[in-house]
Length: 210
Image (tube, rainbow, N blue to C red):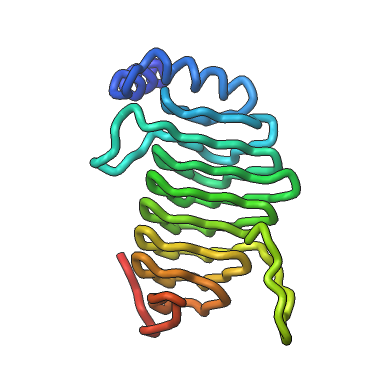
């Protein structure tokens, strides 16, 4: 009975609660502990595993409409550990060869993630609204001295990524670091630093955030 009340309370507060409930029940035929917004469109449920809870399109910044669409297309693997939210208006595509691990983190609304190789986001991390995370250039830029690098993106634990930041292929960000709004990030960064600018660089060390 408590679960029934919880469901009624949750879906009653949603835009178009019956459609939200229908999409959630459809998701749960393949994925346990998943909530899907009425205007979220998901393909590839069979490629999603959840050890915790996944909310798709449920959470949103105050400026977003209840009818903003969220798109999630999973052809590779999406692994959820802990409680994870993919915010309303986000567009996420995970390619056939890619593995995406999201661990107890929050992706705010209107962000774009296109993953062809791999993405890891650690526990307690937050991606603010309007960010882009892209692990491929879709072209090859060749020049003398060019060194190949692993395109997979690794974002550590308790990392804050500010709004409108762009995270490029091969980026690694250490635990507890902060990426300033609008930063264009390439390369490898240590733990506990403030990263800002275009191209982004370390501008403060030994930072904390709350």
